Image 1 (cartoon, rainbow, N blue to C red):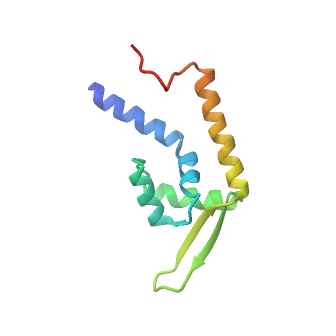
Image 2 (image 1 turned 30 degrees about the vertical axis):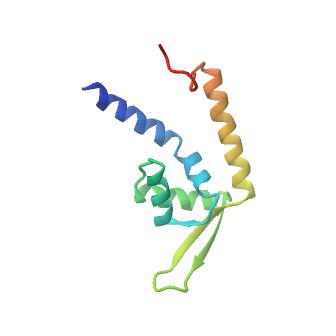
Length: 113
């Protein structure tokens, strides 16, 4: 396997491991599923709709999001936004990510020589 393929696979695994944190962060602003897919795509996070929608339902059921239906248009849309509980969880996840980096002595600020 070529190095760039190995690296691409590892980067995708890293992104999958941080998807919840990234999705929660993207939901600081109200989004519906497709608009959230676009935001994530703009952030270079490739997540399939078949992965995102169950994740949104789970985060909503866990009480991390507030959701509302907009039925004013021909296609009803469910909108999500991070609530206070979700914000607290996001802060804790970010702190855990920072601690993981510090604890494992991974330097993200300087390039390895």
